[in-house]
Image 1: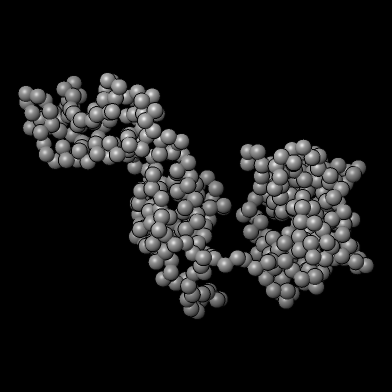
Image 2 (image 1 turned 120 degrees about the vertical axis):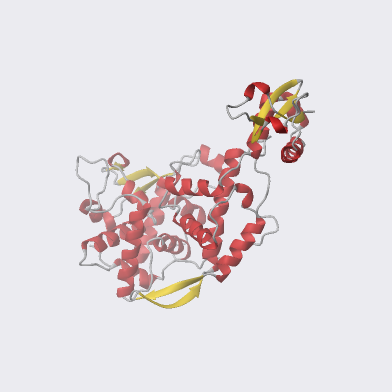
Length: 416
């Protein structure tokens, strides 16, 4: 078993006459030293034995040593015996190192500023609470209960025509979203610092903590009349018309994601078969979960592909003026669609609803199987082994999409 002792070494004397205090770890008959950040003067050291005699220093280092001894009990015995003194010292030193929780939050926001906007709001809440520093050990159930109480009492202003006309409470879904994004950072830190045998972060902040119970979201599909009215809309404003066209393309291609439409490249398009074959942008960076799909461009949107065909010098298949393929621009598209639909008396309609709508019509009105709907929506299969062996039949997507478009448009004229 390893032994520990707080020591100072003669040769480490500094110019000011002080000695750094270290904890000597002796394991398998070999020593190694862990710095404590504490210092002793000669008055705090026994002259004969050169051992620390200051009771304050001994109390502080004794607390650290007890923590080391507790940490060792968490290591599997066979693993411990296979470690040398340096390995053990490195493990124990790392286990006591302060891990800055807020710094990791800010780093994640800097890496993906658009994606982590909710996390940014969660940090703003912490600032309102007066939290300026937080180590990972501070992110615990006691803190979460305080944070939850803060969110429950938080009032947000209702602004109309640049004036505050009242206040309202946060929705439970918003509160849970803040807690979820903070917990995501905690999970990232656990993954970064913990290994199979070395548990640097050992506590569970969600122990005895009650999360918000958020009701399942309502199905977001549009009824057929509203859908048909939307598909017949046009706008004199160029940017709004671009947004309309992109959503129409999305619906007529099995609810294809707007970001996937923007990222299409020329080599993904076969002009002879009028097919686009691509990997969903959402899954490109995920190891082992890339999802490929092939969709036929139906006559209803063929003219839109011609309208937005990119310049021959560009690698992209389509070019939408003033729009770059990222989530920030898609938020602008979303707002344009919402504004236009409200003006036309259709209520609040968002681009993502058309993916739900396509799937709902496919199932309820066209009797298409859920497996085929999953294929059309490019969802990862629930039978990964079968997916490895079975060659995809894209004609299943073609038949399903054609049924949906026939049901929606019927004898109506094409979109142009």
